[in-house]
Length: 468
Image 1 (cartoon, helix red, strand yellow):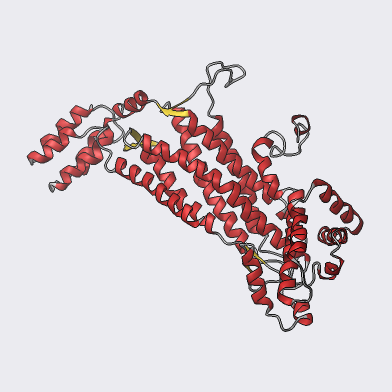
Image 2 (cartoon, rainbow, N blue to C red):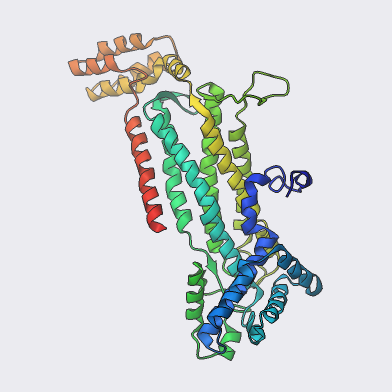
């Protein structure tokens, strides 16, 4: 799509954001679906011929048949659409297209076996299964790992940088910037590992899932075993018991997995937005860019805002898929087919969110002065540590003593708070700990936790390489 025609696109995915999302068109466009269906039919025919031995296909002819989908062109797709316009059935149009191709290739003897024993949903389940698997492996996971590495670098770089934490929006106790982002890493890694390993189901079991036509014509073949081996060769999982449609649970597990990932990243985007709003993170200023049409000083956190919006759109679709696809009128109706045509949109919005976060994280850096000042402005945040030191000595009213002078108050400085607590302490060691406790030192294991999470990323990377 050119810049000019993009102006008239119905959705932003194919218009404004086409440069980011066009790579998904290889998997979820109308062209891609037709091509995947052709691939499914050709591979099924080759496997069928091999198991039944009803016809022998030479290596030369095998190559010619596979070239049909390997070299599938826009012109080929238009031929399929011409057939569809006549027969009003998108999968039957594939069969007619293949008949034409087989005649061109002098493979007329194979025409009777095109689509034999299949229903259209068999072809569709293989096509969509391949589209889901290959887009996940070739587009989504690599982009997610780019994001993971950006987050991991941020965590490592700021593992020991103290900052004020908030709970309920109120000043809580100190943490480190790296540890706060390490939490997002820790949440993401198992979800991405699950996404990478998620099997996707497909079926080649006929009109109502009973293999009836195949069993009738070729009763000596174990068709359930054939289905398992054939689909395994495509890295798909055979649905052992289905209706006319493939059971949707494997799709739903993938969609809900994507929802969880998107929600974690949406959470990260919102926190990053808040840190920018507080002045704790500062965005890089790029020459020539404008933040506001009227306020020249503004540098808006647009990447984090775009990420949040796109994750919301993606999850609205994923949620609908999860609600809709398990429910059908008896064996099936076409409402599921209509819905599946929007799977690419959900992946597209997700991809936009991933890329926006990568850009956003690449533009921000902590304002160490602002972070330090926010800690200095809240000496009361060490009250938890002070009362815990007193309680460790056996002071039963330690909590109340600190509560009386700190809750909702900002009158005491750090040194005054330390001095007051030292008077209540008995042991020399406790008094020393109190004297050394400041907003910048009271970060517990935050630095260690951040660094350990960074190391965890490397372990996941090794596992990913091993899986490949």
